[in-house]
Length: 99
Image 1 (cartoon, one colour):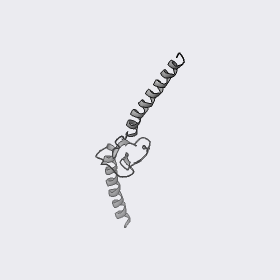
Image 2 (image 1 turned 90 degrees about the vertical axis):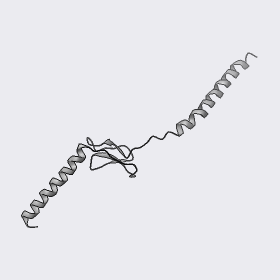
Image 3 (image 1 turned 180 degrees about the horizontal axis):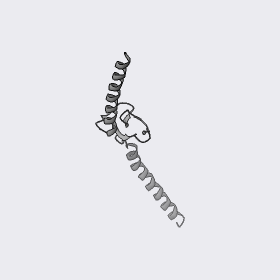
Image 4 (image 1 turned 30 degrees about the horizontal axis):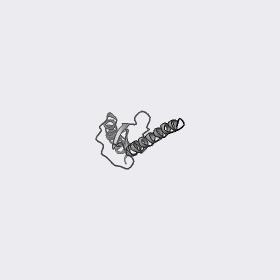
């Protein structure tokens, strides 16, 4: 009888651990965090998390195009201003060169 008590105790521990794994396992399998359309800056190094690419506005955008992005940054404003300035400058130089 003395030999059975440690075995029963070990068996109970194994059964409890198995039940814990069966109960907690499915919870971790359902973990699926929301992935926003854009939410990360890539201004400093041009790098983005997996599944995202750095856009002209220096914000990481999802590669699959899902989600909406309503973030306005100084970089986006600067890019638009620079584009207008460059276009205006190019138009002036083209006019001056006769093109």
